[in-house]
Image (cartoon, rainbow, N blue to C red; front, side, top):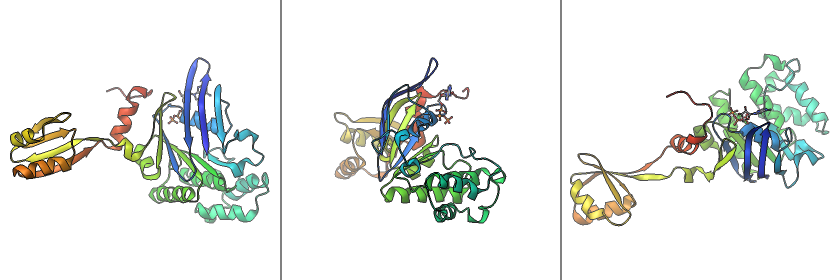
Length: 298
Ligand SMILES: Nc1ncnc2c1ncn2[C@@H]1O[C@H](COP(=O)(O)OP(=O)(O)OP(=O)(O)O)[C@@H](O)[C@H]1O
């Protein structure tokens, strides 16, 4: 479990994280989203104890991470896959980490295998591609068999097979009852992996939600032979009907089922009856519109 309580982080006069509160729970994949510069990496650095909050508390399994005696077993994190000495081999990098916790060599081989890196275990990390570096970072995060796994942009640089691997890996870790949190600025990617979504903008919480809740119904598109007659039979309190074409209506405030039943009772032919949902990308952009710091000129 990761608990963030009223956390604020200031760098000089700039407030980068602003009274942020949320939890990432065991057994779930939590997606941590926000536009560039929203404060995701800063929050993740505070979770892993690389930065201290200006105020507020960050708890991992009920305790501050820095107080943990065996941190690799509490929380496995990937913040920057390039933060590895380029002259080391993959296996020597993992062995060095393993030795700090008395983790056996067999576990190093196991995580190299899980990450698909067994064949390049003795290659120098400096010669690794971006995707291989990401895989090594994820292998390092899993080394201590941690209860909490937190990954910053884990699919960055991975090929389609790698993206699928991360997706299945994270789903499997959550199914084992672990807390899994990953950040991204790509809604489409996170929606395929995460059950729970935390969305921030300019350091503030914008939404603590699920994918299903975020895609709110926008109305029902109806194509009919007699739009005027249909408009009369479905109108009522709270129902809005907009004409969007010669035979087309956009109806909100009632369901596709009610519209279909009303049309059938009056014998009005319908050619189409389609609930309209905002796409996830649209919902994300609507939420974060006022919080985008770095935006192209329009
Ligand atoms: N050490 C620091 N000193 C001063 N400002 C900082 C520092 N670290 C981060 N910032 C500022 O904090 C803001 C949030 O940065 P952060 O890297 O946390 O955002 P992010 O959501 O991870 O963005 P991205 O998706 O681009 O990685 C940015 O405006 C950044 O310039």
